[in-house]
Image 1 (cartoon, helix red, strand yellow):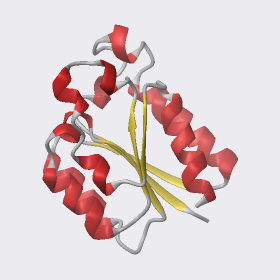
Image 2 (cartoon, one colour):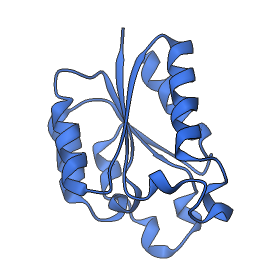
Image 3 (spheres, helix red, strand yellow):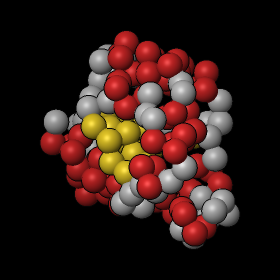
Length: 142
């Protein structure tokens, strides 16, 4: 059975509270439940983690080495400047899909630059929570 790690960065735990006009009213718990149900349908094992700490995200990515078949990552604000997360993704060389709930390319200019994406197989943005499910489907087929 394939193993997929879903990593969420800063403030993703505040879904349903934070900028509902941008991120919607579904909660982080709603997101986790959607992911678990989809993983069950796809017959893959999924682990979901969230941290507001850059170092913790790096640690979790490194732990995946030779243990995980794919990573779905929403680095949050770290997308735009974290060379540490980028380097960790490159080091483990595991297929990774970067997901953003909002279309970051239609938002503030500083969000247009994506540092961490260079360590990923691809990026899904602007499709809401559905982006996570599409990433699961993609990685299930890898």
